[in-house]
Amino acid sequence: MTTERNTFAATMLAVSLSLFTAILAPTALAAQEMDDHAEHSEPDTHNGQSNDHGGADVVQLTDEKIALAGLETAVAQPGMLRETLQVYGRIEPIPSRMAVVRARFSGQIIRLDPDVGQRVTRGDALATVEADDSLQRYTLRAPVSGVIVERMATAGEVTADRNLLRIADYSQVWAQLAIFPSQAEKVRAGQTVLLLGDGVQTEGVIDWITPDAMLGPARHARVVLPNPDGKWTPESTIRAEIVTAVTDAALVVENRALQDIEGRPSVFVREADDFEVHPLTLGRSDGRATEVLGGLKPGVVYVTANSYLLKAELEKSSAEHDH
Image 1 (cartoon, rainbow, N blue to C red):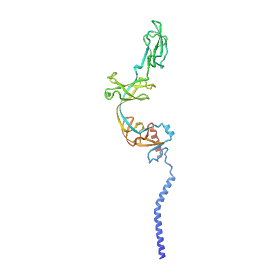
Image 2 (image 1 turned 180 degrees about the horizontal axis):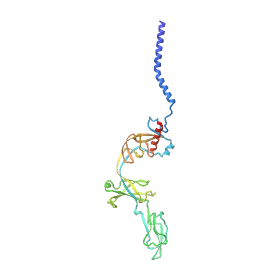
Image 3 (image 1 turned 90 degrees about the vertical axis):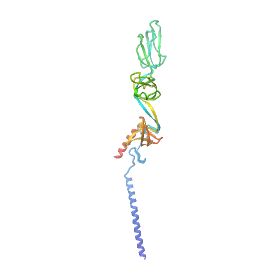
């Protein structure tokens, strides 16, 4: 009886060991495979791109690289979309800020001081003339402040009946915009205008529109432009966008921020040194800003200027990873 019990116990022990081994074997094999993979793997940084963000496309840059790239950011927030009308025109001097200097009485020019390019102030002495009839000398003074843009005489000459100097004050100028009949019903005084010249742009307001076509088929819409640094050159041509309507949008981003990432319009959202791609669903656009319908939350910081550099870095990292 004792022998039978021993035989039965040995048999049950053998069966238990077999079952335990069968259960343990797959787990041990999986653990071994994970260890083997870890031994032959390296951290997946891909030259600045990291997969520590749930697989999202992320570019990581140091502060030095961020400064070197000249990246600029903005906060995603509500904004306005503007319908615009594109027109053309030119910069003109303001007549009341122009003046010519002539002798009050005919005579000989004793001295004529300022030259072209010299700035003068209203009341400055410009020339001395000796009158022919009385032989008395008198002084010619600047009638306005500005710059000498033309000189038509010199000392020793007679004044005769001619202009001696021309003075112009270009610290304020006019932008004269051509408005054709098909555009006239959309344009009125008080509208905002974006003015674009050669390497310069600014916003202004239409302050007057000619009542009829004074020069050719077009009327003129006038914008007064401050020009203290002389960036707006008289007689230069300009392009302008007149704002004809404004609508509100719940969330907008600047157009320069948008990049095509894998066939979808996207922006790079910044968190510390990470720049994460956010694909967007877009709505209306006015050429400068675009309405965001999905993919972005208000208040996040996104890259505006030079965002294309982040796209290039992302593509470079992906190419290196593929190889």
